[in-house]
Length: 380
Image (cartoon, rainbow, N blue to C red; front, top):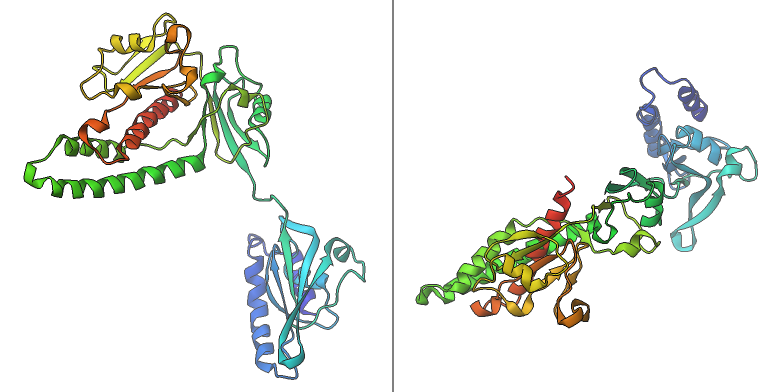
C-alpha cells in the first residue's frame, strides 16, 4: 500500500536528505490526491484524509482500505520531536439532514493507538482530519541574566513561575560586598512600553510646540518655546531601560516571578550621592551622613534661576522616587534623609514658562531615564 511504501522510505532515508521528509512525501502523494479529487462525485467522495500539527510531514494523503490513525501518522513521517504523544484530535465530517455538513470531534488515545491497541486505533473515513498537538511549554525557553555582585553571575534558564529568589539561590546568592538595596532590575516588556510612551510624548510635544510657535509669531517668541524645544530634543534622544523598581525583600521572597529576558544587576555598596538638574554643576559627592539634601545642593553650586524649589525629589539607588510630601522623607529635626547611592533631582520650574500641562511629566522622564541609564552603564 501507499502508506507502507512511504513508511519504508522514511525508514531508509536518502543520505543527507533526512530533513526533507515532508517534501519527498508530498512529491509522491500530491499527484495521487489530485487524481482522487478529479474522480470524486456526489455519491463517491474523494478518498483522502489529512494529518496536521506536529508530525514530520503534515498534509493530505490517500485513504487506503482499513486505514487507521496509526497508519496516517506513519504516512505523515511519524511524530515530530515536540509532539504530544498521549492524545490527539480526530475531526470527522458527515452530511446531516438538509444537506448540511456536520463536524464531529473525537479524542484519540494516541499512546494506546501507537502501541497497537486495536480498539484505540480508530478506523478512518473520507476527509477525516487528525491533529497532533505540541507538548505544553515546549517553546518556553526563558533566559535571565544575573550580573554584578552575584557569586556565579551569567545567564540562567528559568521555567515559568520561577521566582527571582529561586534563581539567585541557583547562582550561589550574593557576595559579601553586595548592596541589595540598590539592585537594578530590567524587563524587556517594560522597555518596550517605556519607548512607546516616550515616542508618544515626543509626537504630542512636537505638535503642541508647532501650535504654540504660530500663536507667538507676532510676539517674537518666548522662553516657553525655547524651553520646550530643549526638552523635545532631549526626549528624542532618551533611551528606555525598562527598569522595574524592586527592594531588597524581592531578593529573598517568591513575590517576583521572572520573565524571559529579565536582568538583575547587583551593585557594590555605593559611596556617593549625586545631584543633577537645575543646579550650577551636576556632580557626585562622597556620602556623608551628616549632610542634608540642601547641603549636597549647596556643594553643587546651588540652584539655577529656573529651578523648582517646591518639587525637588530624591531617586533611591533601587529606582524608587521619594517626594517631599512623603513622610518617609523626614528624619530627626525635619531633615531630609539621604542615603548612599541616592540621586537628588532639582527639576525645571515649568510653571514659570507657562508650559503645556504635561511638560512636568516630560522632565521627570528625562531625569529618571538618565539615572536609570547611568545605573545600567555602571555594570558595563
